[in-house]
Length: 241
Image (cartoon, rainbow, N blue to C red):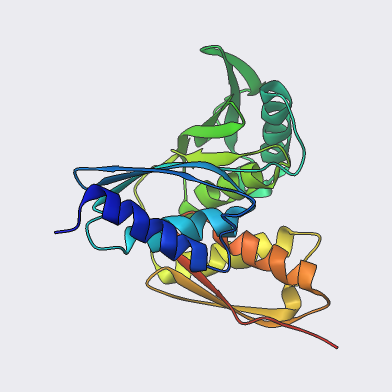
């Protein structure tokens, strides 16, 4: 059996070799005890966060992970500003048009969109140190996933914890994931979704197609990673010449 120090050394070595995880510019703190690995620090983008968690979780001896990885925000914002941006984004999303929206500040709820007899869900938005917490209930997995994507898209977001409950419960599937990724791509103004194809197998998403440049390719992959329940993204998208 590997010692705690050996497992930390192994995790660090694997992360060092991963092309998405840049430990030189974004070093991480690793702690391990009794099968529990704690990962803490800032990462460059969503791909680095998800890949770091994936490769660390695959190492023998690591049974659970405490995720304290946070994205370096595209724009530094105060929590209140992030909360306002998230609420405005949710208000503009058609999939969430029948959801009441509440902004949570210091434990108190402020009405953003009031509930009425036509509402079939409610979303509470709270932000703590740049981390967006979504709680409440929505009527579909698509609504849950789109709420999460909209929160991720706010430039100041450092992480999104999507605690929205789907009521009534809905069975998840690869088809649901594909629909959600396609929807996210269609709504992203920086991506031409008509040139992309999406497949999913056991919640592992594959992207194919043609884009105009490397930035659009990166945005498309990020959008797929932002979708709740996506475990892995294989980006086979090519850049047109």
